[in-house]
Length: 143
Image 1 (cartoon, rainbow, N blue to C red):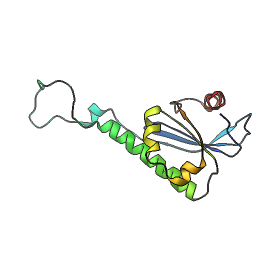
Image 2: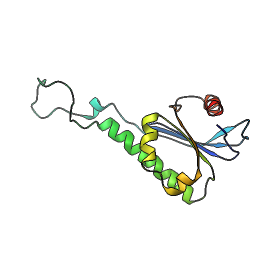
Image 3: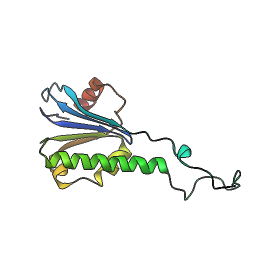
């Protein structure tokens, strides 16, 4: 995938995001961190409590129950899309590439503003938030 000079690359999953800017060129990207953010999102089981007085249930599974962890990850993706919108409307980038965990990418797409879509040069459905920047550069070049 080509990463034009001065493109913004958003690397995001359900709780972490990195805004990177390509200070290099298309052949030799040099991604520099512009902004990083991380939210605490405990596992779903840690966010739930049993009903008052309830002992171990005879009903197994969590069918029909709200997954608070996933709900928070979806909210984080919506917030990331809003941040993209604000940056696009402020003309902070002309070209955008999004690298996101597949589920997060699907959630982001639901919230793309027209200005974001118009500037979108590519997407990569891969979770690279925990990877060093050289690995992100290599993944983009080989995509």
